Image (tube, rainbow, N blue to C red):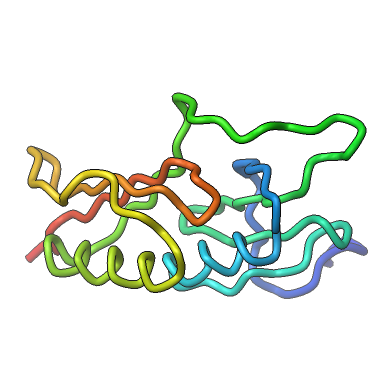
Length: 135
């Protein structure tokens, strides 16, 4: 029997990445567009969630005014793995740019597939990885 917080029969993601945002709803919608998932309201008006493949949530929230978190370019990036090789990557880059992302480095082929580095609409690092479909 599902617990009192269960909303559906499908298992809920249990692990998450946390991303601070000036506009959590807009940034959650951006990531939803990029990975083909619907952004969902979270635990408060300043918290949104995006379910990611592999039982993972992207938690997007506005930091407290009493404990602000300045924007910064760090060593942490959101990495989204896609399918479809170069074609899939180019389509994802286009979707991301249509919703405010900026391409930082041109797409390139690596030993594991194709990758491209972008900044999301709030300047966070985003790595898109696309592997060739298995035959």
